[in-house]
Image 1 (cartoon, rainbow, N blue to C red):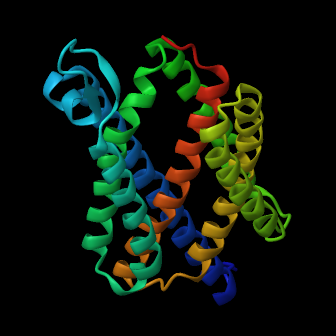
Image 2 (cartoon, rainbow, N blue to C red):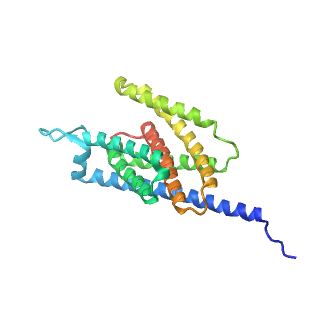
Length: 246
């Protein structure tokens, strides 16, 4: 006699397939965002006309004296995009959400260029590989662990607020010891956020409307932005710890 799967088993299989597709979409869009950031940053670093957009140059000597005011404007614009996406994602179209995420990724490529150019290309590449490995390990942990990581959320959020305040204070103190401590703590926080956010996104995938393609796309874009931010910040913290300055 042939055994047929029960309706419950069939439903569980269908839900697992939706969750897997949802997470693949998140990682796919996150990777696209990172690739766009890398391309824009590379083009900016190697195109004199674009360099003039992100660097302030002394007219007399032609020497670079800092970053341009445009970079600060773009950084505030990026913050606005993140806040807008987070607040309005459920009411905007999937194409608008996708466009805003890609716009953010491109702008981030511009604003990261001065930081990346402060380090050798070899150390940037090595740090990226290490960051990808650490991020991947923690993301897999968040996907597979049976432990509920919800309790991590408030602790990690408080830690994040703490390092933001410390970074602002250190702008005035210029303490290398404080900068080192911030980077070390930052690595721990963003590794924790990677696992926490991954598990949260997996839960989101389990509850996403299976027949609403637009809702699924919006969810994948929000998830991609979340993990993109975790990765970029982890990379920057590690770069400050491990990078070789020019």
